[in-house]
Image 1 (spheres, helix red, strand yellow):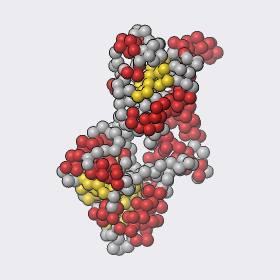
Image 2 (cartoon, helix red, strand yellow; image 1 turned 90 degrees about the vertical axis):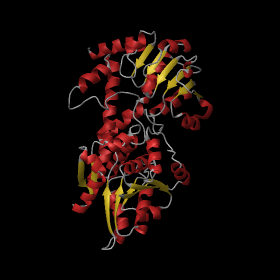
Image 3 (cartoon, one colour; image 1 turned 60 degrees about the vertical axis):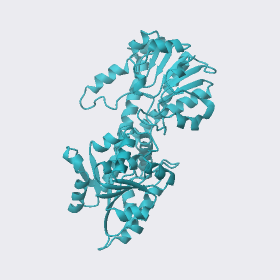
Image 4 (cartoon, helix red, strand yellow; image 1 turned 45 degrees about the vertical axis):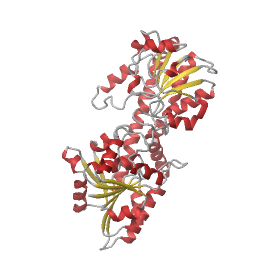
Length: 453
């Protein structure tokens, strides 16, 4: 099949490369000539495991090419995907200018039978706006269809999520047997492996995307609230999490406490759905609470640090990991940034290591941070270590070597990657999210008395 994908960012590029890998001829269109030049040279402008290797293979095999020419892309393909960005505006509502611009160009250049598929995350009713733009040109000669096909890609595992999705959602205007046959052909490799293909009305498809991310965000905020309570009650969140998660209706996946969620999806989509509710006169009380919990969660680890070091001025800390999650260089809404800003505000000196985000960190913080090329170097003369991203390379360190570098031996584990007993038997004082810290034992005992425990 001949396909064009507008937008060569995270979603668009993964989609274009994945569709080419499935044997289609794919054109990627982007308005940024510098990005297009990089892609033509086989360079991915962001970090995503495995993507660059697949990109190079598809370019070499002639199934994937990149241009800035919208006319070329639309005229050359039977299916046009819109995967352009929808960044949040000041009121948290999505900026639809790029999506609607693609629709305008589609109307101007499209002829014959073509399908416009929106893959961008958009507010409910956006497909109606797209159809309204395209509608005047629809005729017996120009038979255009508008679909919604939301993406569910996770940064760090995008290619796996593309080829092995939990479901494929297709939102349509009415039942069209020919259109359904086309979508089954497009996604046949996944369908043959048993991936459910769900056809629904177009507005429901738009809601499904927001509802999925809002639920995941709420789940994370709930387990973080539970972890915070466990600290007060003298319980251990890891034991609670396991005991609760053994209920098959709940499970332990995406039920891990930490310093909060970030990235390009969950915070943006949660805020957008809350705002959409307000604009339609509906109050998302649960989602509003989830949002508030997440905004406060990064400061739990600051509180733990302050329990040990009431005055942070001049104290040196090492930081392991800054990306909002492992497997990506994305810093958008990363909770680590709030922690770093607050520690700097209180006069702390920070020595930082992250496998992939250092270039981006330099642009944000410039010389306010000390940057390291490996994860032992920032421990030099540090009084404490803060773990803010759960990169795999951090999980089995040489604690003896760590101690030899550090001035004082405190670990503040914002992602609970260590076992308390393993850390403490190596003579470190340990704080994990939702577990009783050494420094708070007396306070927690008093709390348990108040709770009647």
